[in-house]
Image (cartoon, rainbow, N blue to C red; front, top):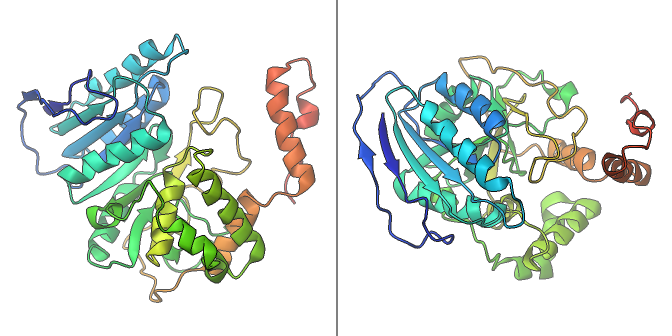
Length: 347
């Protein structure tokens, strides 16, 4: 194993120069030949599960991004250290590079700056966060499609999650095109990441010209995303992924998605940064993709699947939104009857 470590006492903005420390290992031509990025924070247990999944394909190059402990969270320093120590379990021939922040930068700045660092080093990569458990076929799926669309500027990413309704996932093709980026396990190229704009400089023009309505032809979807991007620009929403979504749209880009989930999210819970509430059915229909891949012949997005996905995930009726808030409150007030707050089974 070859280890290249950035200084763990680097400034939070990571503008300090790298001072790598290297240990030489044995080269291996049999391992997975695409760089894999692992983004972690302070959850060693889930990090171990993701690293164990990565170990099944033995990537030759692993790049690890980690945020630092949060002020006011006394257990963070120990937990961040334990999560980073999981990387010492890499026991196959592999070049491991780490980019660890000394202080907490927050999800948006840590992931965005970490991916800037990644794509200074490599032309393409698969990206996994510490709660995104990949099916083994996720890796060859991404590798084949990274090759297929490498020089096609229309395609911004290959995603491991599907937004196709379950009833339509038995279509004969292995993937389809979507306008909705999904960040739970994905892959991209340097050329696409270069379009990421933290400042969202084109959003005012896009908003002024009502371009989101052109994109969806649905007033509710346009209102949802307008509100989302307004919150982002006002710094009231902490998301790098929505900013990458905007970069896709201002460049008329598409993403490729499998017809079934190749990623399961195992990180729901109170110790999660964002995904504290379990989403019913979120890991349904997860499983392998068959090879050889059956390529979708039409370079057109499945807008109906995208709109259906938005309605399922974001446009919840008032009674469901109220139930969602009550369930969050119940965790803080353990005397409330939990059973009464469970959602009814979907019909």
